[in-house]
Image (cartoon, rainbow, N blue to C red):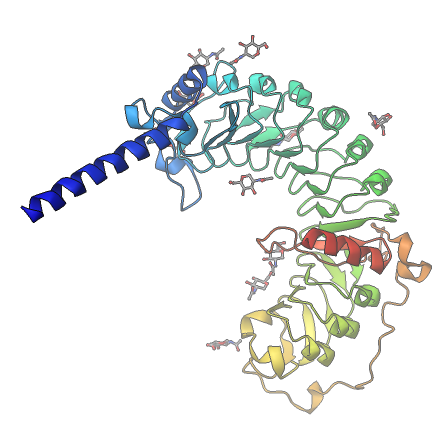
Length: 452
Ligand SMILES: *[C@@H]1O[C@H](CO)[C@@H](O)[C@H](O)[C@H]1NC(C)=O
Ligand SMILES: *[C@@H]1O[C@H](CO)[C@@H](O)[C@H](O)[C@H]1NC(C)=O
Ligand SMILES: *[C@@H]1O[C@H](CO)[C@@H](O)[C@H](O)[C@H]1NC(C)=O
Ligand SMILES: *[C@@H]1O[C@H](CO)[C@@H](O)[C@H](O)[C@H]1NC(C)=O
Ligand SMILES: *[C@@H]1O[C@H](CO)[C@@H](O)[C@H](O)[C@H]1NC(C)=O
Ligand SMILES: *[C@@H]1O[C@H](CO)[C@@H](O)[C@H](O)[C@H]1NC(C)=O
Ligand SMILES: *[C@@H]1O[C@H](CO)[C@@H](O)[C@H](O)[C@H]1NC(C)=O
Ligand SMILES: *[C@@H]1O[C@H](CO)[C@@H](O)[C@H](O)[C@H]1NC(C)=O
Ligand SMILES: *[C@@H]1O[C@H](CO)[C@@H](O)[C@H](O)[C@H]1NC(C)=O
Ligand SMILES: *[C@@H]1O[C@H](CO)[C@@H](O)[C@H](O)[C@H]1NC(C)=O
């Protein structure tokens, strides 16, 4: 008797609970019918193919998009976000979703005209051109088509997305003519982030690019750029990160670029920069990452690097550096990565502190080096002739004429004219090198602002 009462009570209670949850969930259901079917048609127009995405954690996010009663609200579908008041789809994140197939301007993706945020990065659109109907998405502030096998010329109509703040077209097979880049700069004036990595530009950087005065992040990595870095770069007052990795800024004429009142990150590895590392690099007390790998740098490693007390990573590999590794570097307690491979360094490897943690891989290709972790023991002839601190090396560097005149560029045999530093802008700890063209106080302020 008592038992059946309890059962009855439990049954009634559970029923109420079910009804309550049903009501609660159905109240959020305001996906618009036309957007619902646009999303479904977009899903149907593409195949799911594991090899279409490169990210190992990729999975098909659209699998559970369907018509069934319990998932009819497209606002609750994976990757979809709606405006809570209007119910319109405002965000679509289908990055790394194993989508494979061609896409053109008839795609129902372009019916989602309220989209503000769209990423279809890391899929395989089979060499499709970027559809000009992308223009229908006039509310877009963020567009990411990175690493998705798009090809052909970047359409000039793209240029009408006036609210765009972030545009990532990197790692496709796209081409952009110099004029295209210039008109892109004239129209997309709100851009803060522009990633054109691997877009074939094959020209010099157009002056007009500096119309993008809001720009904070600019990557022109592997764009086959040549010639000089235009002096108008100094107008990009908000630029924090400039990645010019792997281009052909070499053999060029003297061109000094004044970068006053501006803070820039540059990844300079894999270019053809020549000359010495200026000792004045030590001014950059905030330097964390320095990557000058694979250039034609000569001369010694400045002992003044030892005063960069927050340096975490130093890559000087594959240059033509001479002399000993300055013992002052042992003072760099945060140093977690060190690589001087493939140079012409000689003498004893500094011992103690972080230097006890680097393997012989850090020193390969310098037959003149000796001491732990290398098996070659140091003899008398390996002792440095004079242990003096010589902080004046490289004093003929362009910094003789002051901080604000930071210069990029060199000519035949000219000295390396760049003050280098590093900041990490993304949480990924990518390695970039920074040019500081402003008084240190201002740098600190800017840093502080980013941290907040
Ligand atoms: C899957 O995609 C790859 C390219 O990403 C393509 O070569 C292959 O043919 C596709 N497989 C199917 C079954 O469509
Ligand atoms: C991929 O592109 C090729 C060449 O344009 C075409 O023949 C093929 O049908 C496309 N495959 C898909 C799935 O769109
Ligand atoms: C666009 O793609 C659809 C579906 O893939 C195809 O049927 C149509 O012919 C294409 N239109 C153009 C103009 O290429
Ligand atoms: C894009 O916009 C044009 C003109 O506004 C319209 O004719 C076309 O149907 C739209 N395309 C899509 C796919 O919504
Ligand atoms: C674009 O998407 C890729 C892959 O998801 C991501 O790594 C990249 O950071 C995105 N770019 C921007 C500017 O958010
Ligand atoms: C890059 O563009 C240039 C000029 O438009 C062209 O000559 C070259 O073949 C292109 N390279 C690639 C790999 O597409
Ligand atoms: C863009 O830059 C060009 C050349 O530097 C200049 O003539 C033009 O006035 C600029 N346009 C805008 C809208 O700032
Ligand atoms: C420095 O850049 C080179 C490419 O130019 C890269 O191979 C290397 O991994 C980078 N060093 C570090 C420490 O990331
Ligand atoms: C150091 O750099 C060389 C040449 O760039 C590279 O082959 C090697 O793998 C690097 N060593 C480490 C420990 O990263
Ligand atoms: C580097 O270290 C490995 C393992 O510790 C050792 O086998 C190798 O002989 C060393 N190479 C040199 C050049 O010292």
